[in-house]
Length: 340
Image (cartoon, rainbow, N blue to C red; front, side, top):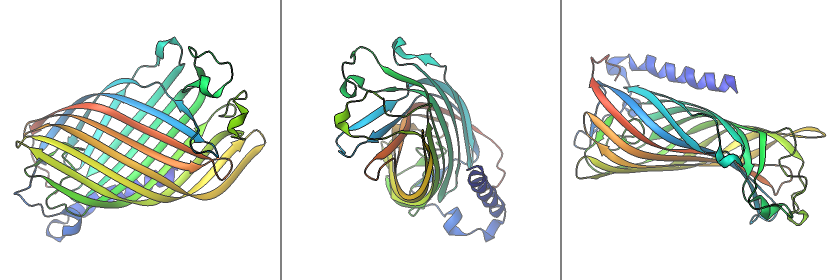
C-alpha cells in the first residue's frame, strides 16, 4: 500500500520536472486554454478557510439484495485551513471526538488530502480513517431491541486510501480548477469527458464479527467476517461541467464511475482467506458558489462509493466516504515561478 502511494507521489514529482522544459512541454499534458472560456489565476496564492461535515459508513448486503446491514460513524463538523498555488492544493482539517446524543458511541477521525491540478489532468491523494461505528436501525435486525437504543461498535475501524489521476479531454474550454482548486475563472459554460486511473486501499476491521450474534436469522447472512482488506487498481470514466450564471456565479458537477481489479483478504475467527475479484466504485461531486479574481465562496459536496465481495459470492460490502464543506478563498497576487 505504501509503495503504491509513494509511486503516485513520484509520478507527481516527475510531472513537475517535465514542467521545467519550457517550449518542449507537450500540449496534451499542459494544455492550451481558450481565453474566451477560461482565465487561469496561477499567479495568485489562495489562502483557504473552510468548515466541513465528514461522514463514513459501510453496508453489508445479504443474498437478498433488498436487505442490508448499515454501520455509520458519527458525522460531525470540522474546521480547517489550507492553501493553493498553481498545481498544488493542500488542506488540513481537525474535528473533536464527540459522543452523539450519548447513544451512538464515540467516533474518531483522521482526514488528509492533497491534490495537484494541471491544466489537463488532476492528481489526488486522500487518506480517511474512522474508528467507532453504530448500527443503523438496530431494531429492524435484532429481535426485541429497544428502538431508543443504538448497537455501538467502538472497536470497528475503517481506513480508506485513494490515489487517482484523471485526464479532461475538453481542457481548452473546461477547467477542473473551478470547483476543486478555486484557482481559475470559467467565463462561459463548458463541460468535459474525463478518464483516468485509480489506486485504492479499503480496510475495515473489528474485534469480532461485523454481524451481531443475535441478528434475525431470517436474513441468512451466514457471515463470520471480522476484517476485510482490499487493494484495487483500475480505470474510470465520466463527465464534468461548469455552468456559469451572470459571470461570477457558477454550478459545477462531476460524475465518474470505474472498475478495478482487486486483491481481497478477509479474516474470520478461524483464519484468513485471500482471493481476487472485480471491484466497482463511483465518485460524485457537486458545488455552487461565487467566484471572482480575488475571492471565492462556495458549497461543495463529494462522495466516494466502493463495493467489494465479502463472505459468500452473493454478499457485498460497500464503503462510503464523503463530506460537505463551505469554502472561502482569498487570493493574493504573488510572483510567478513559471511552473506553467
